[in-house]
Image 1 (cartoon, helix red, strand yellow):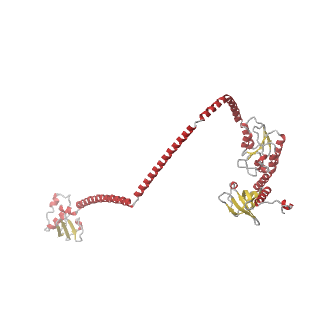
Image 2 (cartoon, one colour; image 1 turned 90 degrees about the vertical axis):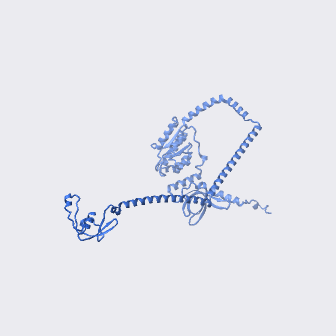
Image 3 (spheres, one colour; image 1 turned 60 degrees about the vertical axis):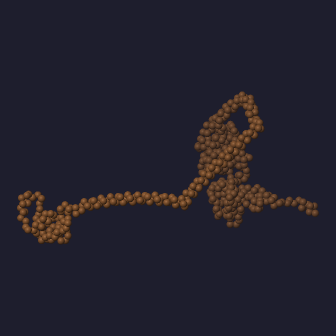
Length: 478
């Protein structure tokens, strides 16, 4: 019944997969490249290297994905809560039917106005297909005439002419002078491109200037310049700035060179290499004619040598297997020997660290130390005995008793003080005389000074001594 209904038969019924696929295609077709600003939240960095986050503002949010091959070029670390600008395309994750933004470039919000204008224009022109490879023209391998659009007073022109003169001096060059910096530079570059195409005297154009800031290079980021480059019927090499500088002219041109000198290298053939190549071709053709037959014979000989009997192949394979078996056995023996040495080493280390081994080592060291102590004690006792004998002899030599044995005496007053001079005592003083075998208690009767320089007459004059001869004798003895 339903089959006969024309409305039912004309229905187009989609599966869920087909519907999601159709929705994804519509989104990617109509929203291929755009810029979105928002705040990062729910940032996730799984082990796959992809980034997944939500971009939101105060009223809405959208899921975003930035794949590993794109986020490698990000020169900052995004974090939750950070305000960013995202350039990307709108897509749909078919498995869940989720609408999402596929990020191709992100940067912190607040980037300079020139940089933003650069990115917006680049994205818009890329969306139009202005940079597509299908529109690029191939450079002529051997150009007949080269045009250079640049400032006539700039260093870029000198570099280009120097390279062209070195590589191919016979190549004619026409210079289309124009300003390459300032507010009027973009229109001047466009007019020079239009003039070069109108005159059609060149089959290759080099658009060039030296390096500088983004403001200096801005004429090459203008839309009129990009469209004039894309509309040119003559292939164009963009050689603007240094290697790190990138302009929209680089994307619109057929070939981009990192520097003006590199642009001249790309535009001109190498004359020296061409001459060498021509000579090589000439030599090659001569050799080919002479060596064709010999080459054919050599091929036949090689084929005959390569043709081998199956038994030879089997024998060679068997020999190879025997060799492998011998190597395997040697390797196993070496490994077994190494393990045995390792086991013996570990066993010796273990035995050297057992308590019994430690006890034996300590016992040996104790005996050695005891023997050294005994020897040291003997040497010390002998040295001390010698020192004692020396000190005893010294004391003996200075002892007063030795002096008394030679006939001397010690005289002391009643305060036990030694009397050495006649002035140390007086008449009627009591003194004590100490001899080798005892002491004498005496009284001083008379004091006679003695001079060893007196003559014999003086000595005889003292013969009149009194009866106290004991005291005189003691004094003389002293």
